[in-house]
Length: 343
Image (tube, one colour):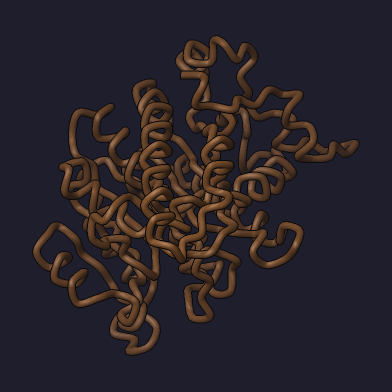
């Protein structure tokens, strides 16, 4: 299984943060694997509740005709998170930083594939199937040892193997809540970032799927027909923020109620947040504060099996990574951990 992972040691992560006299950074106290060849046993015996793992790919996004850059989210988010303070509000010893899914070979294979050409799209979607297998195998082990993975980076295609792994490990379909402008319920035309939840529903791994903040004009008639004939519920962005039929706080409260009866995966597509660099950046989304409230509330009130922060793309905004995006990801990670710890 190690072939699917780039495992991080304490030495490996020192480049992500700077130590400062009189302070204790998360990077100094977070748990890491000591013997990379024995990582499964160390994971099993670790006292950590949370396992942080990255997926540095954007193949799924490109297979869905989206913009590159989601591969850069993990490093940006990790650097900001490890640079935060370890204090009475967040004890990083509850976290194990595992590393990231090995996708370098697949990213290299995808480098020359232009999604403007149909035959290249087919190849990209075949590569996504390989990513599915790798994410599934690693995530299944994490779930089997009753840890909660916090997954950063990559396209929303990775929701499917996460849901599948949780369902298989728990021997039951799970629920999922997703704050997203898009449903990701497009037809099963080959795997990509726009149809992960549809695959999960149709294959029996996802029981009840709820979408918070769905954008009405970016959802097709066919997808709405699918939604209304399956166990999918939603609040649209327009009903919350334009028509003001319901407040965001009330919609969030109701959303949590709808999925609270089963184990639940918590999903956030960063393209739901206004002007955050992502694979489908929006000028009309929720605020960073609303995103943080969403993550914290779900974490505190739901029986969460994982957190998945998808499609942030810091390197689409500048030649160098936009570290404001990394800081936002770090806030979201910390909010999730705090919500769990305050149960």
